[in-house]
Length: 240
Image 1: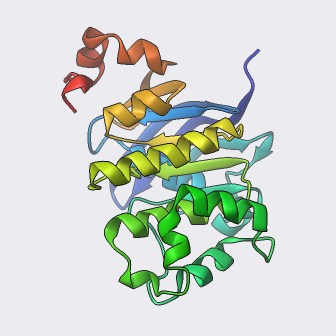
Image 2: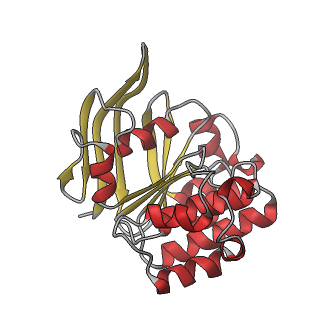
């Protein structure tokens, strides 16, 4: 029997008059990285936002480790241990790096040992600790966004395209930090268009199309089957 930390059953999400998610079923295993893949516009970001409660599910059920989230507010879901890194990063640009991190720690303080791990993963954050986040480079802002989700140990991390638009060196740093988080036994649902990152980090994969999951399986199976990639997404992921 599989051990899933997150389950979505028959989830529908509408935005204005548009039906974005339609009867979405998704399982996220505990203690691994699940890649949420698919072409642009198929509902990946909407899925993360619906899990977080930023957009309400019109129908269906969302369960985190046995707790029904469906009717809970976003703040209640965060308190249950969901860390969320949106595509637009969601940092407070007029606050310092330190203030951003402190606000992210729901427990009211930053653990010194965990902060040392974060500083080792993202040395720039130590360098710019007292600087306003708005003065950071794009890559450094993304590091801060990831670090904020890592400020405390979470039950589940939802991360939306963390390497989008970043230079290769920053992508490598980001992937290394996520790999370390994975080694700690974290459960991660990751939207990522960079195939090298998806292949390196993913344990399982769920491919979406038209608001629903159309395939689930091992990431390695998808990575090693160009025909499957073509059938599911209409392109070879090796070209990404």
